[in-house]
Image (tube, rainbow, N blue to C red):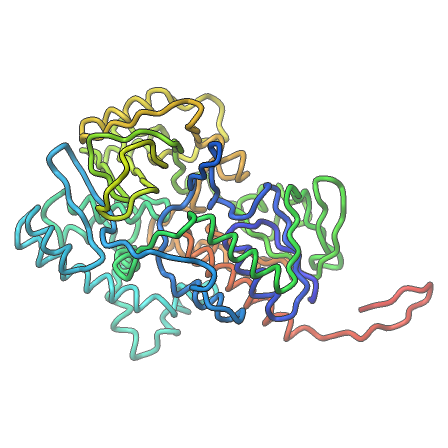
Length: 508
């Protein structure tokens, strides 16, 4: 398995390609888009580049390790700036709360916002989130597709008491009620479920670990999030990886029961001893990679799909609200918002709105002119169904809510871009526009995600739809897990010496 084809230049595919090439394998990456990054894509308005996908950078140790294993220092390739203010939250024009990188500073602000008792409970919550993160970091997130029994076994007798404290059988919303009596704070920390495309009313309490990941540090990436993808590509190319853009894959081919290569949309065939598919696993089961591999992963039921989104990427004028880099404007009825999305399969009548102001750092002075913005509301994953979503009404509700909270955004059509679940479904087939693979609903949801190995020898999986889950660092870990699985299988596969065969053929 010396020749590896990676399908998709998203962050998981890039991490896998770099790991494999730095260990001496011959790696080619096939990307149907014109540039790397996958969902970590920029929008271009003249000479201005705006991040149109993920905007939050956390768990930098994942990338430090990736670069170190390839013989380089991450900081030599990507420049980061730490954020003092993790996010600014608003419920109305007068109700505002900042979360800070410093836990004590956040506790002070929560105390001023909701009272001293809530501040004390916040500190208890932080300790609990840290405990859950530390319990699941190596035993789950960095392990090859754990099972419930395997997780218990990996934890051992010493770790079993800690494992029992991660509350996998209760919902995030229920568990947050033990820490926060103010419904606004429960809503604020419940939002972490949306980081993996889920509802806080159905996601397990283990997702509290996301709070610790943020408290461990949030950074802005100089040059934008897509700069991370560019840096990995540059290092991978130095290790010999060949990138083929505008090269969509039509089929993964199988011979003698294992992967033999792939066929491009141009009908060109490329031989490969192994393939890493960095795309939504649903595309395989739905036949988008050919009939030969449809049984490689279980089909994903529509009811298990994660959140989609409606986004506006723009260079626009923002006035009236003191934006920081990450800003969240909460709806008044959080349960109704998620009932709309997951039960009624419609855009929320009262949306929570996320605004990333990409020219802002903390409370540093802003020039006051047009700035780079990403505005996002959660949406149902219905982009592959007939009929149009009520985008115009969604737009009105979104920007009216921002105005009620004191923020006015003035966009020009030529300097803005709308993206809907239908657009996301076009970009990521078989998803309906779901951006995070399967929703993390119920305690078994994390175990339903496919692992690195598919059912077909030589076909491996990476990306946010597979273990360990969605998000930039998790997708990178998935690529590394896929590369590790491939290398382990390669080491255990008998190496056949070339042998002359009748008719001039050879076996290798």
